[in-house]
Length: 383
Image (cartoon, rainbow, N blue to C red; front, side, top):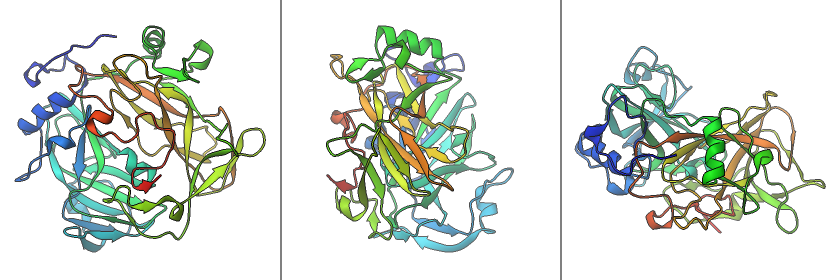
């Protein structure tokens, strides 16, 4: 599947569908499509297929979550605020299970043919911090309408840990899209045969391992390491987690390791948060971007994956030697204990074409944290 190697912002129109890559995102910042008022949008905040969104200098503690619908967010806000917190300097502490709304530093001035979508950064999801972006006059979270011009707000809800945040911290990221560029299931299988995107045990997945339904399914690895260890479960009543201090926290203060029962099964305790790994490894070539979406097994008892974007270059190297990278799965059972088993499908990847290949790819060269991961813990924790 070929996409152009180069393109400029002036070349874009409704007839050039795809996700904007890093070099066009940089041009979009210069053109004012994405701006931060008197502040600059740092070049380091531009990822291969997204822009990091930064917290502003204050947050509102809310009595409930809400959507703006037919009004500006600021106009509806007064009905729900219970406190205002200062995020400058050392920042502020956000308590668990309380929704907070933070005006973001970035705002948008999009052309009529460009839309946007937000998602939590991977490290945010792995810390079990639920986030979603809100815009004026919108009835949806995280989806930004084509041609939107206005401020951005982020709702933040720490679910497992009490956290500290401060102004300038990036918890979410934003992708810009032109038109509809979803890759069909038929095209995904054609890709698998010419330049594999899914691997099992280091080998390209065969037809019987390549399951699609409006996206590509991933399943769960519960074989585990020696001793049956398969992942982590968040502890209760933990110390404060500073989201602006990567590598500063002892993992054992926040997580306990979990292992399987005989037969490769794991019993999920209700409302506990688990970090597990996918059985398959994923390779995202330069011409594609993808998003992990929750897979609902229709029981209503299970929620998987709270963070979503996979950038071009994830699990990929130009020589073709890297057999993908496994995906971290964020899992929570609701209401009742729920048994999951090795190989069970837990989430789905949807792929989008890039407008053109990005000038930089996900990986160590740009400081990406999770290339070739074999451990699910986020970057805030010492290994």
